Length: 269
Length: 287
Ligand SMILES: Nc1ncnc2c1ncn2[C@@H]1O[C@H](COP(=O)(O)OP(=O)(O)OP(=O)(O)O)[C@@H](O)[C@H]1O
Ligand SMILES: [Mg+2]
Image (tube, rainbow over all chains, first blue to last red; front, top):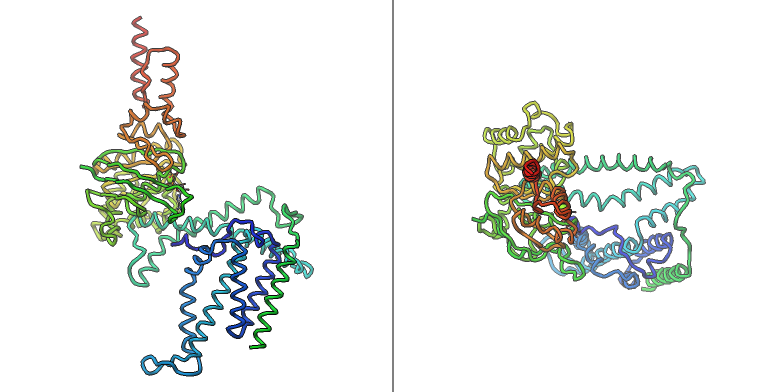
């Protein structure tokens, strides 16, 4: 159901990763994603996988939460795996319908790609589970702040504010969608059966009220912000200052080691 | 004959997590045909969760719901049929309007039940007449109506399915006194013309005292009391313990009683109060 959507959710905790600077976490995430891309063979990817598992363990977020995310992306994962199955070279293991050859290279490729996507999802979840949406947007604003010097000052703030609001309202919208779905089901709406056109049509009674309510909410929010003298970041100070600590230094070192490891394994094997 | 029977219904929103209490826990009761049942309870006590089981929107974690002696989950594929027999009007139902015209929106429910053509038109018109939606409103956009009018249209949308049991989740929330009275009138009119069984969730003890035959009290997911309205409201102390109250008139009479004036304590409606006070005045004049 809709409630199973956990991507972008924060999980309360006190782990090292929860405490570290959100700006550094974003940098590490980008670095690790690039590294996972760079990993060219199973050894390098395996090394990356071990690093991701260690990150998951020290995040102290229950593994169940990560697996829940996997459920959502399972279709994409399977699709990638199946497509890659056909694009391999090497020894033909068996043929489907006498035309499509499945090779050992294909199977290798398919597992490799699926694992890669899985690692992306897991490592991104580590960031979102250990960082509140507010910290995340503050960090992005801070990381983008150099843009201020080339005259994009208000753009940076507006972007960050838009992200904060979007993240803040995702759960609200999901809850609202669920309420409306229930109300229409109570009027006999059939959301589960029928062909594609019928199903798309069945969405109208849900999307129309949902859109209207989103627009209404945004007007209300704008009014409320203006009533509290919001003027777009001018002269705004922060309640929580972000500071680098020893933990960040330590974890940055860990990232560098992971990077060195993956690159070495790439070259050596 | 009982139209609805609820047997040890338990519902938990989280699957199996031990730290969270069940939203509804081991609730059993039955509803007779034609009764008006009021459901009261502190916020979060599980009222909305309970009623969403009665039309199969939620599936019990354990326990059974019988509609006319048949388990509604016997054939899960046919659960939609139950929804036309047990209508549910959600809180703030006006937010579910979506069609271009009032008429089309009210027709959505009966159309989903398979009605069409003249039959559909007739059934929608009948409901509109019953609850006072005038013909000139039929072709208006529901979004151009006032809040109270929208609510009336949304309620008509459920009534148009002609359910045998109709449930209202806080139907008068957010309305002014006149609007609240109008909604109460609509509910009464529907019941009188169809003989339907009515279940109402409300935070207004006064409304409950006026309209309900029986009252079901929920407390922290459990059924605390289920009895005739008079009996429930004569347990004022108990109600207060669980964050509820008695109607304001009842409080007045309790005070009078405590002051040593010779009146009944168990007065729940304005009409009864007037009756007793008139009698008291008569006694005074005679003395
Ligand atoms: N969709 C949901 N997901 C998870 N928990 C829920 C959900 N809906 C309700 N709950 C929880 O179940 C419990 C009962 O909620 P419910 O909405 O049934 O209460 P209620 O008596 O209707 O309250 P109110 O008077 O405020 O409407 C509450 O603790 C609530 O937090
Ligand atoms: Mg409720």
